[in-house]
Length: 216
Image (cartoon, rainbow, N blue to C red):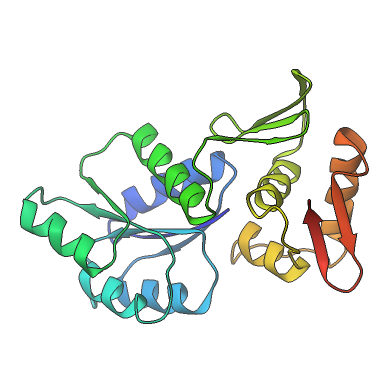
């Protein structure tokens, strides 16, 4: 999953980005609303963490402009706990909000919920036959036995499983699993998919030649 964090306080921005990357998210950052809006409109994100009090363009303005273009899930961060501010954010199209100061585990849980709902997934786990994908712990098992995947293998499997039944192109996988600083080879995705098949079974992921991958 690829997340955009828009926050003007450098220390908080850095700590959030670090924490999200430790959870195996691909993370892009922006230090003001103008930069955040540009990235939000021009790149594909699974969710956006958006501070309200931003320089150049505030969070309200970013959200209002973004909603004219994209339905990307947005989690608002605000230092103001007034009901009017929460209502304003939700009415402008925010999907959730969190009041500063906040606990990191709660932010991570809210992001997981946002990305699940955006993919039409209510539960925090996915079952594919005897394969179980736990999105909270980011662990995978087969018939109750744990299977160790690399962070990248897990991210690919989770994304394909969340979009089960749909062919996902390599381009889409790159856009949602790599951040703006990643530089990768065109055949790297095939290598990771091969690793997943080796551990979980060749029939799990189908390759559609010239189109991409699909979990049925």
